[in-house]
Length: 322
Ligand SMILES: Nc1ncnc2c1ncn2[C@@H]1O[C@H](COP(=O)(O)OP(=O)(O)OP(=O)(O)O)[C@@H](O)[C@H]1O
Ligand SMILES: [Mg+2]
Image 1: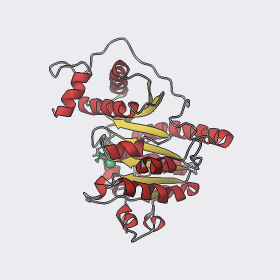
Image 2: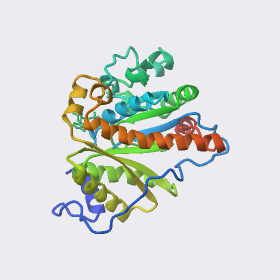
Image 3: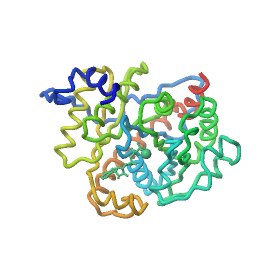
Image 4: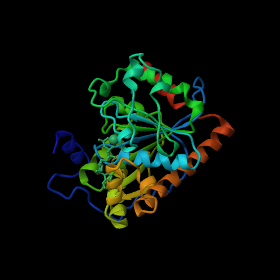
């Protein structure tokens, strides 16, 4: 166990010899609803023209990119204009799962070699992709001024999209948290392994320490055996969050089973919603997408009515300058 895992386990009131979570009857039920969005009116911020979802995880390899690509295509199939930003900037993968071959990436944009529209690729199902770098240590550690440049460039594209999905690198690096904080919705992808749950808790903890009165996060439980394992894993995560963090709302979006069709879709580089439309795993992915789509409609309605939700990219740019 790494020192960080040990700290988190200790913090959760557990010793490494005990089962990682103690199940009690105290289940923390949080209803799914569109309530106090994390954003608040900020007088000087331009209003958002598209909704931005950040997809994150504490531990690596939990399934963020697999989920993001399938979600993007499902949303696009409903007629939404969807852009994926591969924000795993140094070790980008979205293009692989979409079967695309980028001719440029954010590195070219930052170096001034290409404009952002030149590197955005059309993908299957009508989605668009802004590719990150492939094996670029430098891009994995962007300077604040570089984040500000990307935020400004992406901000110019807001009117062209309904939803932007930001597929992040794993972990709680300051840069990662910076991309996550201003998002209109934040989705944490985890799995039932104790390490993944503890790291999900660590991520939730970092986000909840930003002083937001109602920190709302959505959870996707991936690679589960069955409904029972999903429910138990959600309960464990909710318990540890309820025990140590106040003012955090965890909304369960659902689960994705461990599935050989999903593995096959990755191997053939064609997301499951397209390559295996009738598979059970696709039904699960579509169920999660339906909840996020409903939230998007509620978000749109609120923005049409009040125009009080600030632009993600304007917030990101301002934060990078601070
Ligand atoms: N539901 C699933 N069933 C079976 N295998 C899965 C499932 N979800 C993910 N995987 C496996 O896990 C691997 C990692 O998935 P993915 O690349 O989506 O994770 P990630 O969170 O984006 O990783 P990283 O942190 O490196 O960005 C996949 O290549 C696949 O082998
Ligand atoms: Mg990934």
